Length: 231
Ligand SMILES: [Zn+2]
Image (cartoon, rainbow, N blue to C red):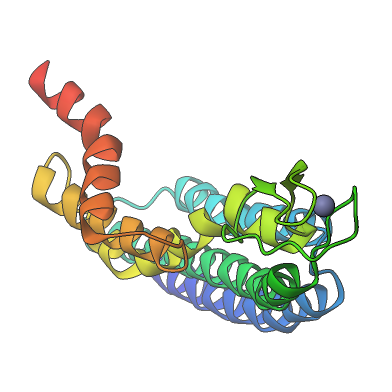
């Protein structure tokens, strides 16, 4: 009887998982469409989603203890479902965060085009042609020789200095992340993760190279290598 109750309970949790995700998915999309340059609404919706998923996982543990069953195979069913919930939660969060970052990127691309052609010298009004479009840089006016800092627009700064690149990296490494759960101290698995991350991170950064991906990955690996070297 307890076994049936356990299995019925797990089915209910699995169903609840589908309901929460089915509700959250279009909800995130609506926020992304409405608030491209303000990350706060999406972030709070996401932390609420995260909390709901965690409480679903906790329910599994609580019920297991309440039922007091002693059967490893049954316990494993609960653990497997916990893993599914964890993964679904992470995947949806990473994908929607990256989607929001792509919305910023689309705005930034429009901004950078305008920045390249429409920037004017603040002293004499002559057109400036900044060559660096993704971050502030010093530009000398060809007409009056005044030096001014040319600053790209808000979306551009958000794209290259904010959390967008991190979001692209996490999305690119989602698959490698799945294997990371079981990788433990396998440095190669961690390296695969950080290489995938770094390539995603740098994909839209001007001047990014595979060498930079390698360097970023090794820098990120530093902590793991340090931990392993100390046993
Ligand atoms: Zn000038």
